[in-house]
Image (cartoon, rainbow, N blue to C red; front, side):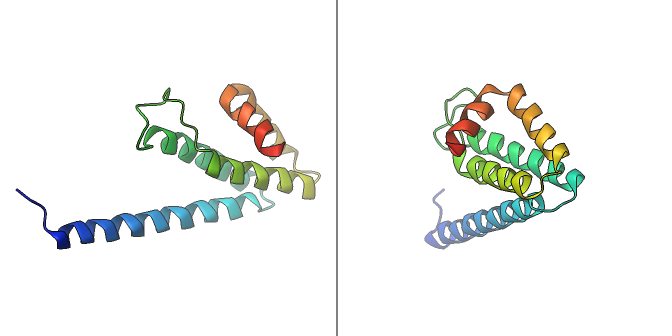
Length: 118
């Protein structure tokens, strides 16, 4: 059975719409990271890290978690917002501690953290 051109066009529209919604959601989470409430910041940070993991896993060329692909686009945005938030809010020790614990847990996060801030 062949797909019709209108079916392909509809599928493309849905994919573009989903990509836009996903991007908007990531932007919303990045804005929450700028919030002064540590609990919200840590939840947003964890969700963004999960998205980094899923982007690597579902990358078109990826064969799984060990494929070598790392979603640095979203990760670098996340780290820059965390760094600025911790710098602006000097008393933001909870977010600092949470970020450091994640960096110490995963070597790839630590390496890209230094790369992105370098």
